[in-house]
Amino acid sequence: MRAPDDLSLTRAIDRYVSSLEGAGYSPNTLKAYATRLNDYAAWVAGPASEPSTDAPAPFVAPLQDAETIQAYLASLRRRRIGRRVGVSTQTLHHAFAVLSGFHRWMDRTLGLEPNPMRDVMKPRGESSIDEEFKALTGDQLDDLLHVARTTWPIEAGSPDLRTSNRKVEDALLVAFMGLAGLRVSELCGIDRGDIVDDVVHVLGKGRKRRSVPLAPDIMELLTEYEPPSGVRHLFGRPTDPGRRLAPYSVEQRIPRLAKCAGIHELRVTPHVLRHTFGSLMLAADPTALVPTRDLMGHESVETTNKYAHTREEARRMALTSMQELRAKRRP
Image (cartoon, rainbow, N blue to C red; front, side):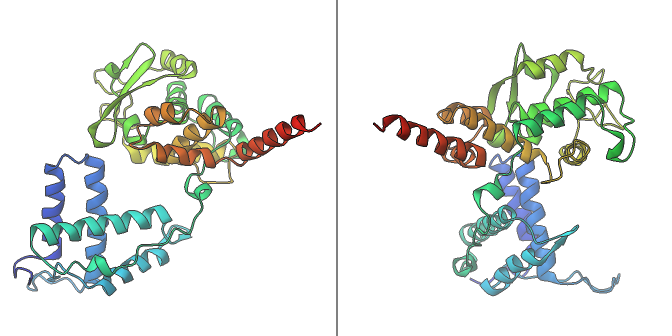
């Protein structure tokens, strides 16, 4: 079926995102979908022409052929992001999934066919599980918590000008993700009333609530922390405490703290801290798949099981245990 004359790609994207909002998708998911699809639309439209008040906005047909979509995915591999070239494999898979959902919606709801995604090759996973689930060691997590709570060394570069309460807050941010496994969005969404005794109640993906017990280290930090006054949220923005702390602010803080703690082997992000929690949990008890799944808010235990394969030292310990067991059985 031919696309309606008055339907542009950007208008189709707006209608699709609105349909997802009506289906109850979380604000973060809606933002991620809209960002990816608008990036795709901008790429399809090509370089912006000279601005003109008389010229109408460029029209882009909603349906693109499979070659165009394949070329867009390929362009993501070449895109320069800071000093790095190419998006991660996880981002590439997300882009493919978003585009697939968008074209299924156009096929089903708008009657636009054929669906070009049927002829688009799914991106190959070029990274191992270890690369996709990077995590800190237990010692590195302790070093990060120590630097966040106290101060960083002079050789780290700029002097540590944080207030004592800011230091406690930084340590809490690290601890909630590294010791409790919270997502950064869940962390920023915590209200004071969400913490009851030694349990925090968070709103996770799909607007599902779960209860996470808090480690003694977190409870000790909470007794030292002074949250913003006159508001219900636990963490406020540095320049405007009356407003809730935004995830992008946490994403800027954590890598800097990690560098000051002497962690240079990988870029430590909120996701890395969450992976660290899952990895350390299963390294301590490989049989704790279901409890770890519940604590992290995973839909499937298969997702949680990936953390059991991310620690080289855990694999070595397992091999050593097997060799010791064989040695005991020998006459």
